[in-house]
Length: 383
Image (cartoon, rainbow, N blue to C red; front, top):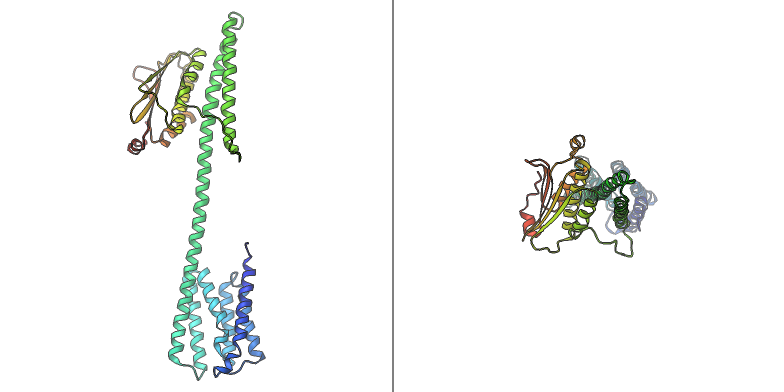
């Protein structure tokens, strides 16, 4: 349970006051003046201000020492009331900077020397040692407590900042996923809708094919969005959210784009093998975004998708011949889609090059390391 600081301080003061009152009768056995009613009242008054030590430590420290001085000046044994001033000095050292806490520790030592001066039976060697050792130890422990508290607060702040960064990164990842899903599928649907409208009265077969493609594309988009929403909800029962897109579905994506009127060819080189799910999703999304840009910015172009498996890396490239380019749209390129490509490549230690070709057209080339050693050698460069 978390107890309020005021309650904790009240309990501590009650315990210290009880110990001091029980120690009072020892004064006579130690050869000191017996405590009378006034002395016991001063013992209680010395400790009472400590209830508010956390709220005003310096004020409480000065007040406690002032009452202790009155108690000592009256000729009573100083040890009985020493617990309160010691706690006050520790509190100041644990809550305030050294330039404030050091004078308070010196005040404790000065009052202790004054107590020895007014007591004829006191040993000056013992008094001097106690006046130096007690304040020094209390101040040191207080400083250590203060540093520990500051470190705990700093750790808490760093954890909160790290949590905020993780949330921001997750939001960015979700935004990229949504952009890739919506942009690609909506581009295909838009092209197919235009085709169906154009041949609606003259070619019913082509119209039906376009409508079938629109239906299939819409269903696939809904399935991917539903999968993402299930991941966001993070159900407690651990139900599977469905498989993520992988390189095995590149052929489906190219077929869908081809059905929209864009000539797309897919070439797979090397021995196909399973990769880490994150790598496959990264490569798939980059190819998807590149084909989406072809549909949006060069609807009449022919595109080629090349997937090459190598021993320590996989390469995905998407190129087009630049036919049917819409200049106004090309000038606006460089938005969230290309930014998402570069961020995905950097996340998995890959390299990506995006830009126009010398012979015309546009090219996107992604190289992803498929082993830990290759990933470490990658420079995370993007061009």
